[in-house]
Image 1 (cartoon, rainbow, N blue to C red):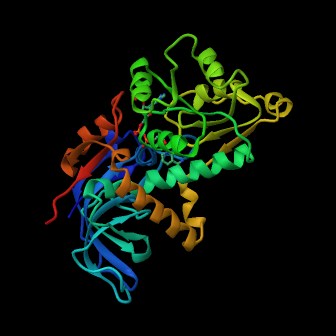
Image 2 (cartoon, rainbow, N blue to C red):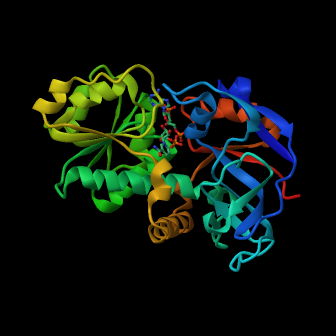
Image 3 (cartoon, rainbow, N blue to C red):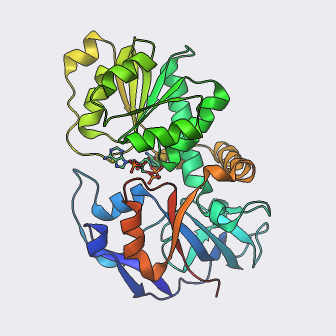
Length: 335
Ligand SMILES: NC(=O)c1ccc[n+]([C@@H]2O[C@H](COP(=O)([O-])OP(=O)(O)OC[C@H]3O[C@@H](n4cnc5c(N)ncnc54)[C@H](OP(=O)(O)O)[C@@H]3O)[C@@H](O)[C@H]2O)c1
């Protein structure tokens, strides 16, 4: 079978290879084998290949395969698996080695795809929806039941658009921050009820302050990090919280103890890497939410482009293209 592999941390364009790998062993009890048809490329996948900042850059004796999410067809089921059958369309997360044509997954991490959800939507409905729920829970904690404006960065991202839709649904006063004037305009047209500001404007800090009622934000949801996050701390209202969940930008986050203490600010990191610590019942509810959202609002799971596994280098370039809208998928045939 084909798979995308890497044997050392580094820039994805340099270390990823298309290679022939042995097919995985037949599924053991409680497992299924899935022929993967679509898998998204998330920024986190590329960060994992690169090696996370501050972590060790490693070489691996056995090549690794990126990817934790995707969709495909069940090929075979192991002993004791009752509710999945060969030929069934399924999505999965978090299952390692999604960037291969075949994988073996624990049956409890595999989700049947309803008829009214397309293959493409199914392939990216879990990570971004679970991220949305993780962010909404963190925002709720940070607001302590009080109303107050929320600012989000990288607001044109796939996750950012889910946050915008949820803010409109739940009446959260959200200010969308992006890095270009065209990005801000696109968001104003897509979500007319929400303000959008571009950091390319010299007076963007004043615009954000005005949009948050002059006092600053109760919560900032930040996927950019680095030096921008430092500026966003200045735009928090006293007692506010910066929730950091990504590092798309560069530079260091300057944190002055006296800024945090005198203004009672909180900085909190969140990650779906901790999702497996939720109870099985809680995870089932999250998955049910994701499937419902995929069925009722498929436009929130926009696909930017599709590339065959063999064209992974073009796909990775596309992921990093400024102004990209939606998620890039890697595809492989059903047989
Ligand atoms: N913590 C978690 O568990 C978790 C889970 C999922 C996602 N995430 C994070 O969520 C973020 C969004 O993911 P996604 O898949 O939704 O992304 P995406 O659809 O690929 O979109 C990326 C967005 O980031 C913007 N961007 C890229 N570099 C930027 C920079 N240096 N400064 C400002 N904006 C920048 C782009 O803006 P342009 O339109 O201007 O190009 C684009 O709108 C990523 O940081 C990802 O790592 C975190």
